[in-house]
Image (tube, rainbow, N blue to C red; front, side, top):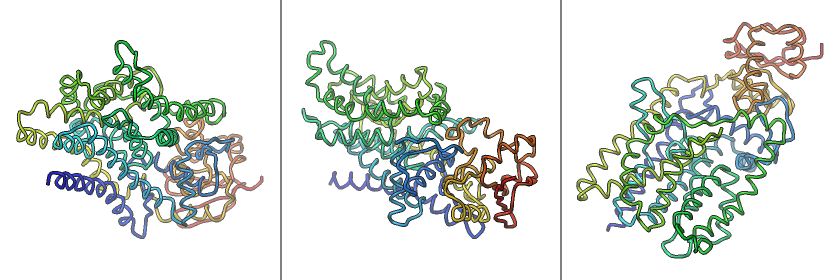
Length: 513
């Protein structure tokens, strides 16, 4: 009976979560009507469109990634292979890219939550503790909603890779990467790891492709666990199951990491992109608020179980402590260490509450109270999505005329054409047409700040004749729509010829002067 009840609770939570990450997008499409096109992204549309642009490259048959938001094509490299693969799947089945993106997102979310509960089953023998940990990690977030009342905007609203719900809400590679991470962290109670060597290697390779930094995190956490388990003599380090897992993961994942590092330092365009792609950690107060209130209970869990001989508990403690400490090493990508950090914090919080509660009744009452505190931030995110949908926010909607203009570009221009458009429009063009732009993304546009200023000055009419001539010499088409008109009143140059026009959108072809 207990097993049946547990399955029912887990199934109900899964249903609620999967509905929560799907329904807003369905509403977004339904609300587009005849006048708009929903672009398919509700959380961080900037990165969402960049993923779609990568899928477009795979759809047209590219096997090497090139920066889609930079006018220069470059040599490219074997990066973002997951999205190139999804693009090929879309081409194979004749399915829109955005549909494949969200199908992959939903499937990845389901896999992640199943792997999360499997991980918790190996960690906690008490059903009520693991159910509570699962609820917290699945639907919870921090106390950012309190900061919002005072004008603050904390990490639990936007650092999607740290929180399972936000990961599932934003893209497919975060939840799938977290699922692999959890499987690699799941150890059986006996000497055997529960995963054969070949499966460990395969999953490590896939993790290195999906989330290269995930491999770094896994290796550091497992190294810390080995250090803890073998302390102080280290005599049995080579016989340790954890060390063996660490070795195979390193052998599989490190070569891919080395390739990524080499190619992003040797390719001139990717080198600039890499130098712009900085992800500093939030201030400490922001982090603590974004992980509260569960981090307070997690401290109780650490204090109660730090002498435990259970490998799964030691893993949680190692992950939580290292994850927080590594966030503040002096390095430009330090925020990457937040990957999945909410999971061990929630698990330790459930363990801490289990140690504090005198009986199941008190445990249940406290669990309900804490759940009520961790829900509002995600509810605010969902309500914000509803507001953006209701108002046809231009960050997530294109006007129908803009969409028709992009369709014309997709069908009537060469595949290697370069389009000059406003910064906001530049975000959508590579995602919907595969054509290159001068500016569209703060990281994936080389010399992004200078290019954004140049494009803006062009539509303001503030360029000199020489500057305008140099820019148009690198341009094939100029897109002029509502977003461009907001910058300034565009006056076409003499070497621009009408190629497409509606009431709100004009596209000019650059002709030889």
